Length: 207
Image 1 (cartoon, rainbow, N blue to C red):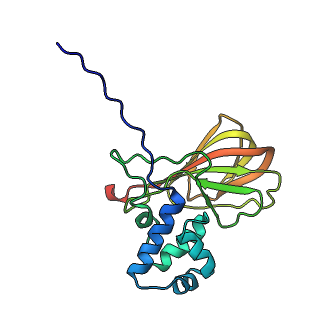
Image 2: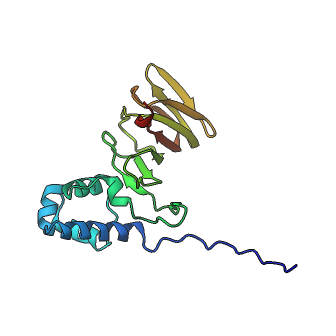
């Protein structure tokens, strides 16, 4: 009987960074539609210089800018990201510090949202965010959205409101709630605050 040396799988490394992938994808779709940079920039409400830098992978745009640009090209975010880092097994890796910064309506200074995974299918199934809040946070926005939201506290202490109830959250605490009920931070008790927020969307196909 001959012994066999187990074959270790090679680590999954994306061929290009997310920043460069976005630039290439947007440029390719723009050219497919025979549109100029200035035409797309005008529809997306950004400068031509900014779009040129995005296409060349020189800047990391916010999700708000990417969404406006992809919409100007007739694309959904799922379609835009569908070919990004899809090796065998469809695993997706986002290295530390590389999560896309997201602009959420109602947020001002002191609020930072980083998206930790990017939907690539025809439907958005979930959105995981890493949220940071510091003592510069002035406005506490309230949100409503589809699906169920799960919050897990990593650092700091916060009073978080959901509907008529307010919950004190400390490191290690978790909170799960319906997203269609008005919710959001009520009071920052101890900063800096860091927590995971995962929004899980329902599957309409089972209805």
